[in-house]
Image (cartoon, rainbow, N blue to C red):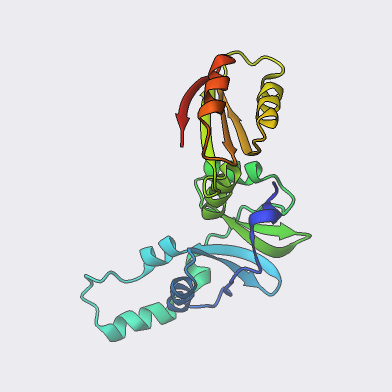
Length: 206
């Protein structure tokens, strides 16, 4: 899976001269938390909802409504945006984007292709992909089991067993010494007993 598969194409953007009140309004209306800042076709920064709230007058301020509105209208995005923007290529692996976000402690990355902004990928997109990879919203049963030694043929033996029983494996993930997979049936008692007889330790069935 690559970034292009899950990114939001044609993201909402602002210009450097957009005032912060307008930028906040866009975020609230569209339900988003960050906006790329564009000067023509060039990405020059990014602004987050958290940053805008930090620089906005506090509700506890002694300023009048007129004064607060004046400050919100006067302060523009270019004064508070992040100028050094980390980006990612649309054909980068999803794991690469996740590592960049995790290591840099950021929640989103503009997606740049041939110098042009083509999308944005966020931590929400990563979470959604994780759910889809595990198939947690799909019908059927999720089986988690330990397989001990990483010996050749483990997956082949599981696939052969499920095929013989007419059961389809729709999702499969290996993590350390665990195999997590989803099958297209809720009747897994016989399958579970056969897996146990093969030496697998089933830790959960959902």
